[in-house]
Structures are given as C-alpha cells and as structure tokens.
Length: 432
Image (cartoon, rainbow, N blue to C red; front, side, top):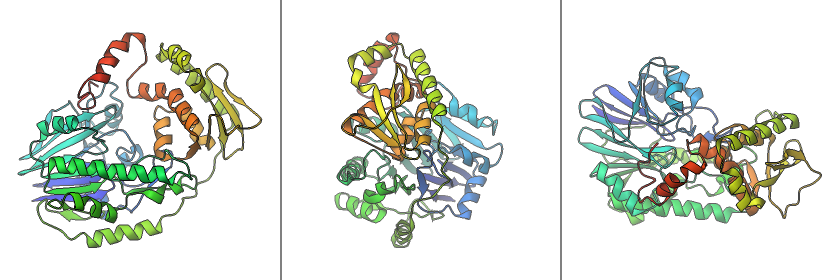
C-alpha cells in the first residue's frame, strides 16, 4: 500500500507497507509571535496519523514547519530527521524527546523502507527541500524554497531526475506592507504565481500539489494582510492556464491519495473557501511589556551584537542614519528612540516623516531578545513602518538574524562571504 495523507498546511504523511513518514507537522497553535493561525482545523484522524508515523522530518526551523509546542503530541522515542547544521540546535532539542534522532547530511540518502527513501538538500540559510522516492515515484517537496533562477532549477534536477509529484508554497508568507499598501501585496502574490509557473514548466511533473499556504494572519493588527492572499481556487485556475498538461491537486486535512489517480478537487476547494469566509481576528489577553524590561532587552541586544560581530562599527560608519529608529508602541502609547550608543530611550513624539515603526511592546521585546525576532516580525506582519524605517529595521537586526543562522560579520570572514555571495549555486546546498 502506498498513500499520501494531507495533514495540514505544509504537512503530509507518506506511507508504504505500513512505514510512514510525516513532514513538517504544525497541528495546532499560533505561530510567529501569535501572528498566524491555521486556516482549517487538523482532523482527529490526522492527529492520529502523525502519532503513529514511524518517521517525522522537519524541513527548517520556522514554526509553521517545526513548532516546538506540538512535539509533545507526537509521543516519545519517535524517529526524527533533520538536516545537518553547525549549531545542532534542532537536533539537540529533539533529543530531549527521543534518542532516535537522525542528522542527515546534504544529499545523504536515508532508507526508510523497501523502495522508500528521503534525501535533504539544504537551501539558503535555514530552509531545505526534500527528494522522496516511494515505489516508482519521485516527489520533490520544495517546502518554502523560493527558487530564483534556472541555474538553481538545473542544480536541483541533477539530483532529482524526472519529478512525478511537485509540491510548493503558493501564497505570500510575509507581512512586510502597511494597511494602505494593498498594491504591494497583490504584486507579491502575482510574482509568486508567475515564479511557480516557471518552476512547474521546468520540472513538468505529472502532479502538482499547492500547499504550505493554508494559514492566515490572525490578529487585529495584521488581519488586513489577508486581503491579497492567493486562495486555492484562484491559484489552481491561474497555474492551469500555463501548464494544462499538469494535474493540480487540492487536499483538505485528512484527505488521502494513492499517488497515481486523477481526483476531483471540488469538495476540498469548497471546504477551503468556506474556511476563508470564517476567519476573523483572534483576541488574546494583552500583556504590555514595561519600559524597564524593554530597555534591559535593548541593552543586552547591543552587547551581543557588538561582541559577536567585530565589523559592526564599520557598517555603522558607512550608513549611520540606518542604525537608529523611533518606535511607537501601540499598546502602551509610548514613543521610543533606539540607537547603539544610548540604547532605548523615551521621546515626546514621533516624526512620521522620519524612520519609525509602530508595533506592540511584546513584538519589540521579541525583536531584541530572539534570534528569529526580526523574521517573526517580518513574516507575522504585526507592525507598520515607512521605507526608511524598514531599512533601519533591516540594518539594525540583520546581525542578530544572521548570527542565529550561524553567519557572523567579522573581518576574518570577509573572503568566504564574498566567495559565497558570488558563487553560482550559493543558495543550493550551502555549507552549513
């Protein structure tokens, strides 16, 4: 028996001869600092499927693919699989729950069962794509990998050969636009679909499964971002026009498929369309962070940044205006200024013609304290800023973000960084 069960969002379970592999299970809960929620509920059947899976594999550390609070739902002593990384952060975390953790090197083929294998190809800084062979089928799961060039596509197909089933994200997963910038969101959505068309046309799979986009921006301060999402019905119709020979499949949580048959998407699409109509902002108890706590977090952030990146002063010297920013806290009405000399200080008012960012105090605290705080803010979208403020956020927090991904801005690393930047395939199979 060979089958695929769609779990939810970016998660599927492949089964062959009673051996099951579940990928990226996010089953419940809010992610990215309580910014996203699942569009549809995970079925009890799918909960059981994940619990009974022999193997669980995670593509990368973003919480809609690897959500730590869900790990306890999977049972003890599970066989976990993750890509090899320098920091071993995820590997060590999983070992707290099971001794059966496999760290898979780039392009290493792991045999799960008879005619059932998985190979991981790292991509860019955190992500990875999966090449799964089951029976006589080759499945390429791109996860969140945003392929930008034919060089990258060619590098991938060298490893896959003919692709029978292609899986990829189909809507935007970023909140980097203000309420009045719907045109930007529409451009991003269209760009994603056009890029998908190129990818599908290149691989020419028999089946394409759009996934990893069955979620929504779920808070009052980011709910407007849902206005330009690529919904599943529009996505399939758009992609079909450029790729009429490909079979497009839509699965709802709990749906099963034999990896071969043509299916009718009507029922699953209608379920999603009903779910889109039901979404609304989720109200959570507001817990404002005190200024003293924010100031302490900012000071610790400065110390860590300077300690780990001895080129910081060089970058700040080149662009001094981008290493300071004003914050308007939406939950406490405080106006704050941040720079690397004085840390976080109170100011009387915000000049909206200058660099500024509006956000809640919990989001600001996470920016200073978490290695993925900047990613969580950009992806979750619980903020508004102007162009200059956006550049300041990027400059100020890029050191912390890259440090979290094991990249540091030190003089001894200049040559390797330049080599990587201009390497033809630097985003495919990077040295981690």
